[in-house]
Length: 471
Image (cartoon, rainbow, N blue to C red; front, side, top):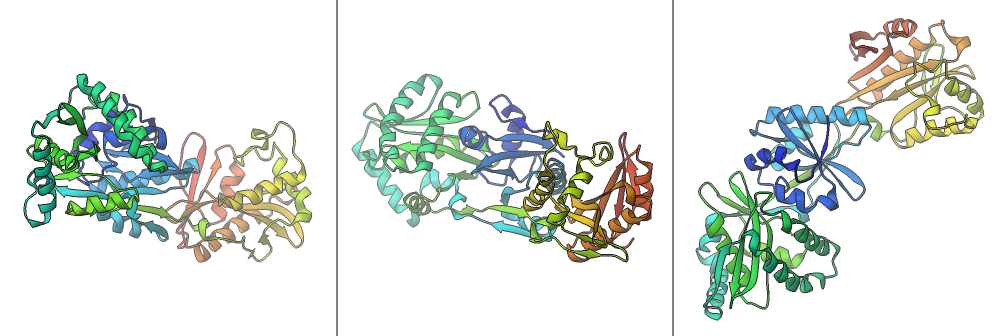
């Protein structure tokens, strides 16, 4: 899966997905992605006829739930599978964000362990477009009163669609407006203002539309948005609070102008935890507060807090002891013997590190939950290493083994592989243990067969093997 930078040019590839979406999530829009480009550094990939967005926030990597061009849930789940494979291959922790409420059950049933959250501050406010255009009934009496007061106070008011030539005046208006915004001394409020300025020069090239509200010939309100499926997402809505009624007037006129045929909803985005903004958005009577879930699948290794001890008829698989650091370093640093292991210490070091470095690195790999390394002991003698690694998100892991030269050819490797696989099935709830060996390594291929694994395929470099609990 190849991700591309989400710059303005690349958005052309994503635009059809945003334009067709009916999930009613504001993040699935050109304006959102461009506004928050600097903060989130979004990138995207297209797989299985789905758009997958990757972003970074607070030092973590997040993947948006796949957005199908046609709303096909089977396509979405195939894209989820592709993303699982990508994260497993690239050693990236898989963390889904913006999972629609209608898809959460699919995701929870997919994983044996998952953390599911639904942060209130990021939920979108969805309104019926016709309600905003008319402010009908008792529940909108307050908004109608504010609109009438604005009309009485500013009988020369105007609302019109903005054009590129109006952007100079809009920028001057925003500079006046931002004094109060910056006064909140809130980081998110400041970032939001920065992103408004970032979006402004690109509104029209991105295909967004905007409206301007004036009173006495002066701009007192500005709003911008885009069409996404059967809704309009309002990305910018700013008005001078000194002009009483300007906000409801701006909201109503924007809906009248831009909620054309086929638009059923207005998405006015989230409140970012601002309680004043939350109160205001709730007073407008949303028809739905759109939930956006995070789903974090747990791999089997994520639930392991201590390396185990596994015994066989002849061997003990256990964490390598401190006193065996020199023997372990001999095993791990032998370049010739490790050409089929998949890792060469020279990748990270120009000179051979100390004996302690090799053992420390193995322990750090477990601490970071990258792998579960165990020493293979014959009595009290360290003779090799068995490793469970490449843990996947649907109950799979890969096993590997290596031995010191004097202990090869005695069946110890296959005994260790079988024992560690059995442990994975019984204690880690693993469903599939995988393995691979270089085509040039005939002894390893034969060893995996003796360990009870079935060969499942090959490519130019490797033979691939699989074992499950039935085998």
